[in-house]
Picture 1 (tube, rainbow, N blue to C red):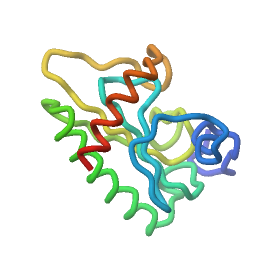
Picture 2 (cartoon, rainbow, N blue to C red):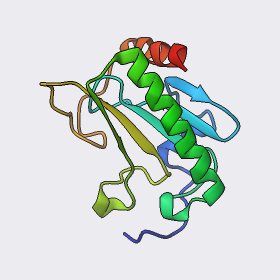
Picture 3 (cartoon, helix red, strand yellow):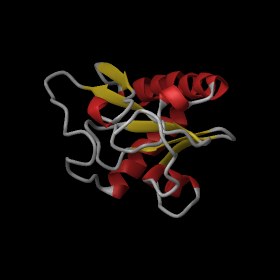
Picture 4 (tube, one colour):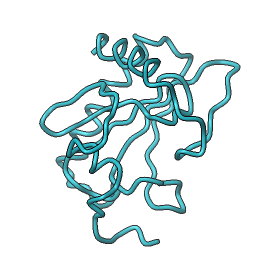
Amino acid sequence: MSLHGDYETDNIFARILRGEMPCVKVYEDDNILSFMDMFPQSEGHTLVIPKAPSRNLLETNAKDIGRLFGSVQRIAKAVEIALKPDGIVITQFNGAPAGQTVFHTHVHIIPRYTGLGLGAHGGAGTMADIDALTVLAGKITAAL
């Protein structure tokens, strides 16, 4: 699969943005949506996406990249305050060979806890309990 191509309007994040699929929201403004990963690699795994359609960072408007990463920093700080992890991984994949599984630009904020490994990436792991995600999202949102 090429890094460039047509944006697929039926991807899961586009459907979330249109309100066709639910999410456990952490933060939203006119340009950004952040929500809990349904298949978290770690407790508190949060996603941040631009609302403007783009397949990956290489196809994202520079202004949207600035907004995206400003929000990533703000939300990562809230994750740190709310969940007190020992570290935080911030990662972003471009193209299937790089690990991208949803072709809408997105950034992962993954809390790391000493002694605990990471779950599988990209929906290969266990789906989280919605009630547990809602509690985590509430803590993060309160720390924003």
